[in-house]
Every structure is written in C-alpha cells, then in structure tokens.
Image (cartoon, rainbow over all chains, first blue to last red; front, side):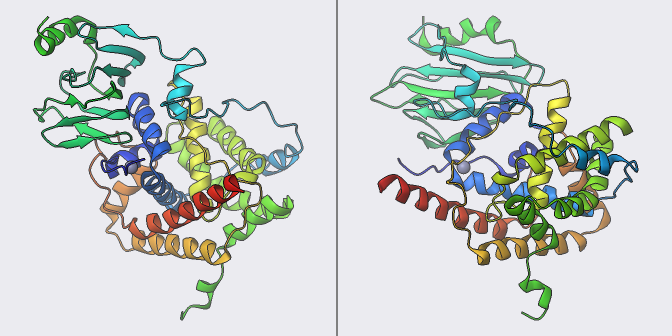
Length: 213
Length: 188
Ligand SMILES: [Zn+2]
C-alpha cells in the first residue's frame, strides 16, 4: 500500500472529536481514520484535549443519590451492544461498509460510465460513492460549500496533485479544478459536501458539461 | 525530573487501570466523584436539562465500567477516553444520525503495555493542561467552546492552535508498536 499523503485538516478532526462535524463529513473522516494511523493519532490527541477541557471546565454538583444509583447498577446485565462492529469489506472501510449494509452498494448509472450510490442526504449535506471510469473527468458533486473526496480504489489527478487510495481532497468553492481518474481501474471515491443539495436537478447538466453527451 | 509526581501516573489512570484489571469498585467510586460533576456540566452546556444531564452522567459512567476492558492507556488518556464516551452518548440522544466511528484496531486481550509509554502519555497530557492554563481567558474560552460542542465545524475548521504535536507523536508510537505486534501474531 502506498503511503497516504493527503490528510484530514486539523480543525476538521477537532470538530469530529467534538461531535459537531455533521454526518456526511463524519463518515469521510471515520473512513480516512480507518485507513490512516497518522490521523488516528491526531484524533486521539484531540480527544485528549477534549478530556483536558472536561477536567478543567466548571463542574456542576450531581444529585445526592446518583452515585449510589450508579454503583447499584454496576451488576445489572449489560444491555445488547447498540451498534455492531463493522469490519472492512473489500475496498470499503468499516464505517462505509456499515453505511452500505450487507447488500453492498446499489449503483445508479449517471451516463458516461459514471456511477453513484447515495449513502445519505440531510440537513448537514450529503455523502455518496462515485465510480469514475479510468482516465475520465470526475464530476463535481456540489455547488459551493466544501467538498471532501476520499479515494477508495484507483486514483485521480488534478492541478493540485495525485490522489491515491486513502488520500483525501478538501475543496472549497474557490478551487477551480478538473480531477481526472487514473488509468487501469475505475476510481471509486467517497464524496461528501456540506452544501444544500440540488444534486439531482443539476447533475445532468454537469454530466453534459464533462462528458459531452 | 525535578517534580517527583512526574514519575507517577495520574490518579485517574491508576483508578481506571484498577477498574479495568481488578474490577475495583472503590476505584470506580473515585472516578465517579471526579468525573460525574464535570460530565454533568458538559451535558448542561450542550443543552441537556438537569435530569437528562444526570442520565447522561449515569450512562457514561456505566459504559466506563462495562467497556473498561477496551481502555488502552498507551493510546488514550483517561479523561480523553471518557470525553469520547460522553460525546457519543450525547450524540445518541440528539435528533441526528449516530456518528460513524472508525474501525477499531482489534487487539489481543491484555497485550503487553509498556509502563513507560503510559507514563509518557500522561505527562504529555499534563503539559497540555499546563499550556491551557497559560492561555488568555478569551483564548481558553474558544478552546472550551470548541471541545464542548458549542462551535459549528466551520467555526473551528481552522487550526485550534493547541500544541498537540507531541501527544500525537506519542500515540502514533503506541499505534506503530501495536501494528507491529499484530503483524507478529498473524505471522506466527
Ligand atoms: Zn490521514
């Protein structure tokens, strides 16, 4: 496995640790951390910082019987694990495999050989898998906002460099770029945006623009 | 080393390891005394009412007891580990999808922990606490708001400015060691 050279920005890891990042970006961060010990260590460092804040921030007295009630509950049988542990499945890191479920990705064709599989769309943005045929341009997946693109298979190149498996590209609205999938195999990415979604309406135009169909 | 307390792990680490390794209820009670009022304050600042905040405190502390076996002091410091549990609990109770979590590194039960590593991480975190104490009140206020979940991700997207490099390197060393051990186990 080649070394990962494009990582999650520090502030985004902090927001993940604090639980304020929102589901679409959290899925991308959790997937990257599953593949990258550098960011796993940085996340743990931010959690340590959160722990220090917990230690030094003001405290609030708890009810007199809360401790006794908690101690009395220690022997209670443990409730069933609410969230099962998901392992990596093929090219999909654990958290992505969990989002896909046992059936795996249900691809929709988008023209030009491009396929997508929407994993989630909501108020915090959207996250999807994109599959781009070798040597084809990658469609942008949002209007404005920030886009995160994590490579799960293959690679893509753009003006800022090469992105291989595990690499994360962070693009804000100001970046003019035309990513192109590498040769050999389709480039499969996990792509998220925090912009309000108008994807279905404008996608055909984009596909026309990039694939001239 | 000039300060003799530097050579000892923190009280919290000692209590947590006693809970993990010996199911020590007295040590758990000490952890409760230390963390419960802090966890309650954190939950209240995140918008929980007093009763719901105490439910979060109880749930978090019970999870600490139940999942103590997963605590690895070479990769997390007690307060950071408990912070993570509390934050997950709060997310579970809010009206939003559960936070996707990274794959766990599957470790062998009771893999050999290097006491020097545990102590080193404790000391790095102690230095971070000292560094936070030296911040101007408004800077500290921002950091506090960021980690207590009061800032949106776009507000903390920039660097937090905290000196986390040495803690990260220390945890990275622990991860490298763990990966090496796991590789060794698979090969034998
Ligand atoms: Zn990384």
